[in-house]
Length: 216
Length: 115
Image (cartoon, rainbow over all chains, first blue to last red; front, side, top):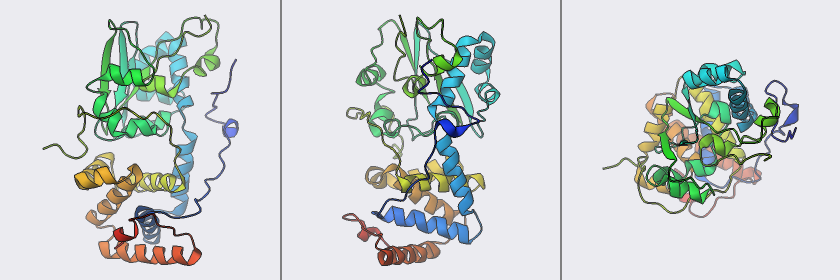
């Protein structure tokens, strides 16, 4: 197996996280404001420094490898795939990835339909499953254009869709987050779940990339 | 008229696909926002509403986590958790501390934003 994307949810030793190192300098008013807000909210007992640190650590521990496990399981287990398409939250929770406060909707790519996800209003993203969104997902260019000229935007990511493939663009909201279930690459029949998960990229779960044909 | 966030379908240039690793202060801002959210003091809807209320100028001028931070400040005042006077006083105090420790190196134009 090629395990470079392997991530064990329960045991983090594959991905040791060094504590974040402070930048040497503070460069902007908003950086000062952020420090001031944090200190005030701690002084008033609204939050604790430990809570902020725990949320940072939790955020760091969530990576696209979590979503890749969901995808690989769906490829291998038709009953799981059906549960995922029916209720994304429950299916993710089955694999140890709880998603709180938002509804996860999985959308499946097929040979005649491709799905791509955006949040035109800001940056809503399945953070609890994939981690923080990439910078381009939050960019004006992606948000503005992918709903109007999605094929052109996908081409900029090197993704060429045939004209006879229908393209569905899903606009996320504060309440609903989307996960693209990419097509399983051909030539991967012999691979086990872990090896399959290692093939699944973040961008394929957002829908801007396809997974290539695998070994064949 | 469209709100500042409502940009779906507008003409824009090419997507820059480069990756950006969050720096220390951005991670702190993300964790701070999550901690406040966990207390029921800032939902995603409230965050978006607060960011929208920053206006078109701020949307274009501020980076992502600068917008989040400005929105958090606004939301804390509107919620009555903090007052603007408290925030301004604390900003001045933090600034002074950073000057004394030599950690403050404001970029061009930033000093003018301070209260």
